[in-house]
Image (cartoon, rainbow, N blue to C red; front, side):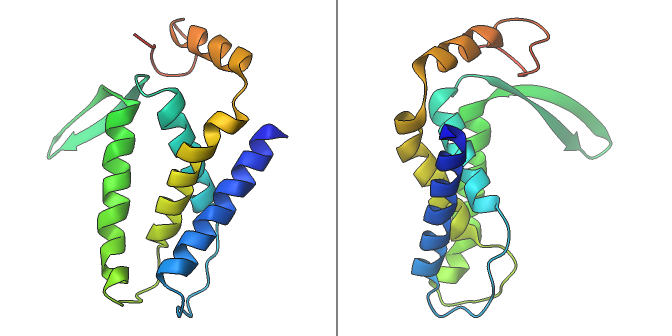
Length: 140
């Protein structure tokens, strides 16, 4: 229930952010990406050092590297901000509700501490150090 409520609040904050920035838009908002962005914001705050396996494609060379969550999510939020800049200039192109992503992400950062369960968090962090845990890394 805690997660469901956190997810819904993130989604509502996402919709509010998008409607605030583009109040006259006639493009419908459909999807859950704003709420998922809230989960990403919460993840960033709770697990900033967890290593994320990232696929890197450079021409004919492809590999994976491990980067801390804060690097990947920082990169992602910068892309959302840059993608949303045309909306501030009044360009209503439709397609992606960038400010919904930003609003959900910020809501996740703000509300995750309200919804976290200390015991669950410590158990998850301990699991990051175990090989094969499925979380892609460890907390240093």
